[in-house]
Figure 1 (cartoon, rainbow, N blue to C red):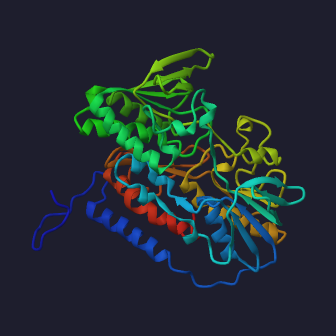
Figure 2 (figure 1 turned 135 degrees about the vertical axis):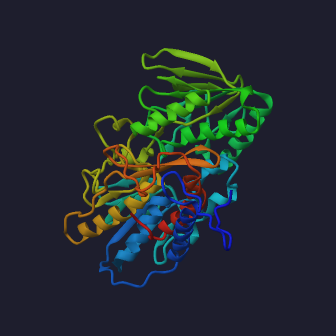
Figure 3 (figure 1 turned 90 degrees about the vertical axis):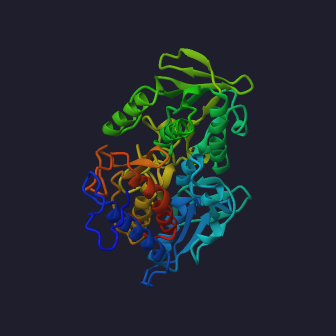
Length: 454
C-alpha cells in the first residue's frame, strides 16, 4: 500500500487509527525538521541586559552549552566562561540508535568548538573545587576563576566501580556491554547482540537503585536487543532477564503496564527486587542482591550494565549537594525544584542531570532548563525574584522495536503531558520512531544554540 495519491486517482490517503494520515504526519515531521534547520541561522540582534557580571558555567554538555547560549543572548557585557575539558560533543540521545544499528558512531559525535557561543570563553579543563563563599572555581590545572554567578551543569558520574569486581574498562569484554559508556560501547552492544544470536545463551539487563539519566534507556536496550534477535530468526536461542529494584519499571503507570505487557509477550523475565552488586568478568557471573540483602550469583553470556549514578565528588565537597532525604546519598546539586536556584546560595543555579529534582534527567528536560535557569539568573542579577518555573517536564521516545516507539511525556505529577494531544502517543508506532531518528537530532543541536527552548 502506498501513502501517495496517484494523479487522477480517487484513493484517499492512508489514515492512521488515530485519525492522522500518514501523508499529513510526514508533512508535519518534515516541516518541523525544516524549521530546525532554519533555526540554526543567527537570530536578529536584541538589546540585552547591560552588566559586567562574571558568570561561570561548569560543564559543556547539552545543559551547559544551552544555558551559555541563552545567557549570551540575554546579556550585554557579561563575561561568560564555560569550563569543559572535552573537545568532543556527544549526542547522547542517539546512543540507543547506535545500539540498534540505525546510527553510526560518527552520527552522534560533533566538535564542541562548533557550539561554544561566540563571545563566550572556553576553559578546557576539569573542575577541581568550588568555594561558594569566596565565589571561586578552581580547575584541575590550577587556574582560579572568580565569579559573580555560577551555573552547575556538570552532569552525572557513571559509577561503574561501585559494582564489585567491575571497572569501566571491562565494558566491551567478556560479554559486558553498556550503552551508557559511550558511542563506541553502544556500537559494541549492537555487535555483541549479533554474536549472542549466533552463539545463543543468557542475556541479562539491569537498572540500579539510584536516579539515572534517561530512565527509559535500560528498557530500550532490552527491547532493541530482543527485537534484533527476533527479526534475525535467533530469538529462541537466547534467554532474556531484566533485573530491577522493587517497584515500577517506569514511573508513569500506563507505560509501566505497557512495558510489563511487552516483556510478557516477548518472553523477557522480570527479576523484581534484584540489584546488580558484583561481576566476575572472566567467569561471566553476576551477583544480584534483593531488598533483604540476600545475594544470588548467576551466569550470563551477555550483560548490559547500567551503573549506579551520582553527582561528581566536588559538588558535595563544595557544600553544594542536597543534605537530607533520599537523594542525599548521590550528592546531587541542591536546587529549588521549580526555579533551579540553589537552596543555600542565591547566585548559584543548576541545569541538566546534576540537579536533585526527582525526575527529568533527559535532553528534553534540558530544553526546559535552558530557559528557566538563565532567565531566573538574569532576574536575580537585576535584583528581582526568579519568575520562571520548571514543572518537571521530561520526555522519552520509548523504543519498543527497531522501527517503532511510544512517545512518553510527563511532569512532576507523573501525569502525561502530550505534545500531540490528537494522537495516542502511548501506542507504539512508526511515527515516534521517525521522530526519534529524524527530528530530535536537529532540534537538539539547535537547542545548543539557544533555539527551540521549552
